[in-house]
Length: 536
Image 1 (cartoon, helix red, strand yellow):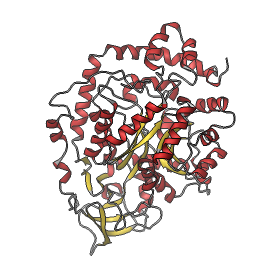
Image 2 (image 1 turned 30 degrees about the vertical axis):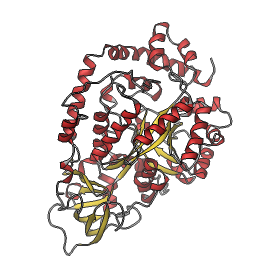
Image 3 (image 1 turned 180 degrees about the horizontal axis):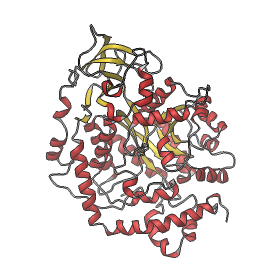
């Protein structure tokens, strides 16, 4: 079992019984027939018909279409034509679904774990504050929540291994969860080989900690090195096991500070050899910026370029502390950047320079990172928050609605499924039937004028509670605001019950939680003294 940090849990068995969602009997009750229910708008999985008050076929590029009928045949949009008369009943607005370019498919929310308001560097150890749980149950619950919020493409950087089974089998469980929910995922196999406690060699950090913390922190967080060859072999094994599914397996180096140059070089070469995407964090916090400047005086982005890692196959999460010249190089190399607005705010990491990214020509995508503003994976609200922060001030426009929709949909699909998925997002006939249907009667409940652009209303008010229906590749995942591809409520209830039972029989988890306050204080002092820069 691969355990290298707090993100990888100590190996243990989770209970298997007839009520577990990975057992065949329970799977039949949680998935299957419900995905073929007739849509409220009158269609089925293979032939949906949606009569809409408004259709935003290409938001920000093509004006809204009033009173149109959208038809689906199989996985594709079959038709988009004017209705003979305004549709009866509640009004609907239809637009393309959204994409989440950076996530970890985490199971429980930040505040639930008692880690609200912490900066990343003292927050990370809290990820080990939960015992191992059923990986199918964890992934299905997370991905169902994403689907309910209008997201049909999710990038899963799998940095937190549940354990209790071989890694490849765990990856297959996540892939099954994605298939049952009906979303497409990128699965980045987490890779690292150094600096598991802070931004310095583990023994150096341990020596600076209070003596009573050293043994438990070493056992829990210190990296157990694994060769690049073995880590690459794991990626290929997962890729073979998931072949033929809606899963794009990727290399997932955790970040430069956690990966040695030999590992990053090996990943770069393997990515070129196999045309496989790479997903990695970069410059998320000011402390990472400090560390990078001290460790790589020539520049961390140029260092990655020399290693051969910068390419159109690479997605970098965050880049909140990138400088203009670094962004220019990323744009030149065709790298995708996933901006995680709420996560950066919640972890006190700052606000990414999105306007500068766009000015330099970077391809920018939207990530939720498991930490949307209300801890609910609300992608519509996340999109609007990003637009509010980065659209510009006064008369200066630094982000257009068209750029926003590329960020919220198109570029995220590329991050999830690779460069081949980088095609214009549209609801035109022939396009993939990825449709998000909003209850427009509820959202536009105070209409006075008939010439108000529905895109403006969407950007002013839209959030997940207005979502009525979600269709992915012609399959209805959400109907009437509820997930119908799986029983989300049953999954969530079973997950919480399993977590509470596991906590009751896991004294080591409670012991680790008891260590966290003192560890957080010690790490805070360590960073505050500038030791991550190699001084003191």
